[in-house]
Image (cartoon, rainbow over all chains, first blue to last red; front, side, top):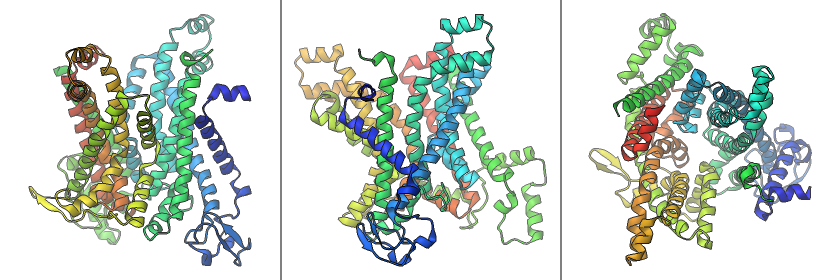
Length: 292
Length: 325
């Protein structure tokens, strides 16, 4: 464990980022267990506790009895801390699932393109080029304007935004790997193309893709938050961090900062810690930078 | 060169077509286009008339051609909400967005290049490291959240800057402009800075990398040997050489500034076309949505094309590569 941590990074800031990320993920997973209130069970909310500043102790006639609103409450009397934990869950689920889907799709296409070359390569790379010439947010806006709101729809949009990065990265890795001896050996053994592609080529193309997808999770979460903030991402029934920030926006203008501020801090912590960890992963997985 | 040009123009054409198909399929094929294109209060006779007038009784590919033909002449129908032509509506809002995007671009250059030069000349110093640390933050913080924090601090807590609208404007060549009045300047400062944040980080990184590379070149050593002042070496010789890549990248980024203005305009209630898009999406005003998407995509394709051509003129290696594949 100690060794693993040393191999990861000797720097305090990098370790802090890893620790913060682990805490956030665990908190998201355990949200129903550790949050003081289920923020979406109406029986547990009391509108009289609406817009309480952070640290208020309010005793009211909700099912859970009196409680501390450490991070304040929103206009519905919802405990912000609980809402943030549930929001983290949704943000992470959307970010991770869209990234994994896009990774699987882009990786397969990229491997095929790099291994076979020819028209498959040209077709896939041209489409990827065209798509990457537009900023992600514009593609997402087009898709969401066309598809409408919903969890499945935003995952589709984030999937469409991301796949081209993986296809490109996988293709360039496959182009290098396909000329190596172990692929020639596998071919001489008469292995099937699928076996060569997915058992021999794929594992060797994976390291750069892990780094790219780690960075992409952060940008997917950020993009989802942005779209939800604009009101065209997730529906109000799936309150991700971006949606929480969005509901707090109007109260921010009259000075009740906490409804927007704390979900924002959680979002920033999540994104920055993922970015820092991904940055370290890049160095760890790069054999050229490996120290003795 | 001609082959290269043709190839690029064709690629741009394909990109435009793909986007138009996407939007067409979204608006016309998914769901009932009548619900989308005809006012919901219309009676059945009117709906039938509209179906025939829009050609919706014809096969899908003919419909697409009609859509394309209309789109080329800039006719996307009338807005349900405003009643006027969707294209007119967008064009009316466009100057505000362009002003915001250009203001952001200027801020990115004015702040980014000096900071990048500083960090490039002193990469190991505390100030150089701080600048790089801030640029990493600029890359990873969600823009919209930074916008909220700006409003929270400067509008709500300190009350220094207004948080919405364009302020008073002055007409310049018939177009309203904010940056020429003190009130307008106060209004544009925060949104432009917010929009510029990502680009400032980008310019800092580009300038720093360019400076570090340029300082090792022979011409810098020669200028030093000649006894030129350090300020002249950096300000004239180094800067001239690193500006080309920075200018090209910023040209490409102009399009993304326009796209990202959607977010900034919504936060600061800036009356540009991005805000109009978000309003139209939530009001289900489809003609405006379709018009916005196709106009912005077309702008994008044109900007990319121009930058591509300029870049190939500046750097002959690019042309050779394109001819080789």
